[in-house]
Amino acid sequence: MMQAMQAHTVGVVLMLCVLASCQSTLVSPDPGKGNGAYGMFTERGLSNLPMKPGTNVRVFNDVYLDARDYIKYDKSTGYLTLEPGTYRVDGWSLTTFGWQLTPAQQAAAYSAPGYAFLWNVEANKIEVLASLQDPLYSLPSNMHGVINVSKRTQFFFAHQNGNEVTGISLQLYDPAIKLPDGTPSTSHAFAQLVIERL
Image (tube, rainbow, N blue to C red):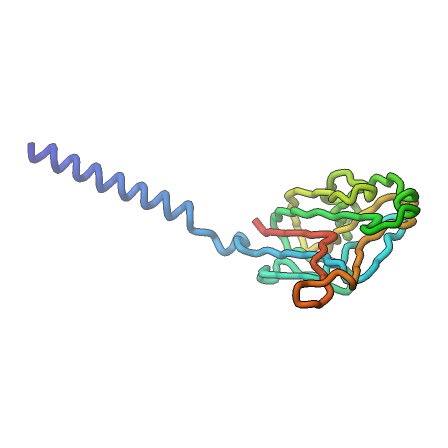
């Protein structure tokens, strides 16, 4: 009877040790793998910015980085620099004919399908392609992907709706739209991007 109890106790202790070992393996991040390095980027409407034909680089004016130098951002160009590693990329971008259009402006709106994309500057190619979008409906082009970066590389997040983009905007700003405190509202996002080093 005593031997059975001792064997049972040893079994329980071994089981607890195995569980504790598994738990610590699952919850302990490896700092060398980049866990916790990320950047969040938003392009708010701070001006009335017309779209140009072809590629339009999104220049984010609301940037938060907790990236430990793995991710850098140049607000003057819109270029991102990523150090070697694997990154999850999630974002969206929209273009629009605007709000509060006159009947004549509404009648002049037209379909101009396009999409957002993450561009690899060094390789001169689209790295991640987003979903189709049409400024006629002001819906976002959504992007989700994982990329492997083998060396320090520059990227930018861009949007295109073709060459006929008359009346289409990348950003809109209406000073008549006020916050409760009376200041003009800039709470209108036209693009967002999150990059996380895995």
